Structures are given as C-alpha cells and as structure tokens.
Amino acid sequence: MPATQILVIGDQGTGKSTSWENMNPAETIIISPNAKPLPWPGSAKQYIVGKNRIQTKNITDIPGLLTVINDSKPEIKNVLVEDLNHFYNARTTSPEFFARKNGNDAYAKWGELGNDVARIIAVGEKFRDDLNIVYHAHTELHEDGQIGMLSPGKLLDREIKPASYFTHVLHTLVNKTDKGIEYVFLTNKNGTHDAKTPKGCFKQLLIPNDIKTVIEAVRSYHNG
Image 1 (tube, one colour):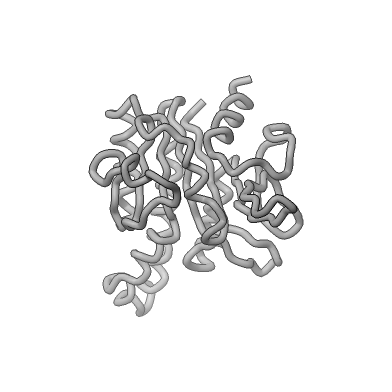
Image 2 (cartoon, rainbow, N blue to C red):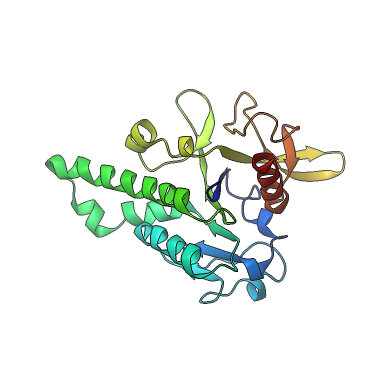
C-alpha cells in the first residue's frame, strides 16, 4: 500500500484546518502558502515555521518537500498541504504568468500548471506506506450543479480533474442542530456536494470533523 492521500474540500470557515487539532505535532508537518494562524488554541506553539511548518508559495516546491519528508524524516507520519487554491493563486497572479498572454504560450501556461498539480499527487504514489498526506482545497458551484473542488481554470477541470486522482474526497459542512453548530465531513455525494470514499469505508454519510479518526478509519479499511 502506498502513502495514504486524502483530499478535503470545502468553503472557507467550514473546518478544513480545524480538523487537524487532534493530530500529534511531533509526527506532523504542515506545508502552508501563507503565515495565517491555525484555528485552534495553542496552535502557534504546536506548529512553528522552520520546524514542523513549512511556508512557500511555489507550487513546484511541493513534490520536492514531500520527497524529503518521505526519505529523510521517518518520524513524520502526517503531512498537510494547505491550501491548494492559494498555491494556484500565487502562480496565476504572478507577473510572469500574466505576461504569457499571446498565442500558444497563453494556452501552454495552463497546461504547465495542470502538470504541476498532477505531479504533486502522483509523487505520493511512490512514498512509504506509513505516510499520510492530506490536501485542502476550496469549492465552487460547477456547471452540472454540483459543489466541488475549485480549480483556477476550466482546462484543469476538463483535462486534469484533480479530485479524480483521489480515492478519498471529504467535503466539510456546517450543520445547525438543536445543540448548536456542528462541523462534519461528508463522505459521499449527497445530491449537491461532491465527496467520495470506497464502499463500506464509512458507515455514515456525515462523520465528525476529525482528520485523526479519518486516517485511522481509512488505514483500517485498506489494511483489513
């Protein structure tokens, strides 16, 4: 079994990052495109830039960083890549990208971005089997009426389809109950929101928003 890779999608403020609160910082590295604080008490002391939090805006850095973690840091069992859309934006808003707006070069730049996205996911297929890699992405309303992963352009949606590379795609939702606000993961499509997990991996359509228990369930499912 290769490294476990999970995609978590959802609108901002729906609990993507908060789901990491119960993870062990000694076994975890977070790769971030910015320095925004993680959304739970004490997170600044748990994840420190230069120690177990890596900050970069360059999407092409990610495969190399993941490879170093896989090869040189056996104590690390969990990696969070947060947030793919911010990495997209750093590329597509750069002066270099904007300047490529004529002829074939205007089309080629999107293909290159698509290949870079695919490389991030493909590199994990060769990693050690005790490594868990989780990717976060925002969502948007697609033409088919489904709310799914947000990508920077239709070319990626049509030709790369990043979510299709994952066996496990969870969708963060916020429910209002009699007891208050409830943050959950959707494990399979509910008619309007994209999500998918293998048959029998999760018995419920909605599960607690806790990536630790998700990883344990996924590993138990695939290892029998």
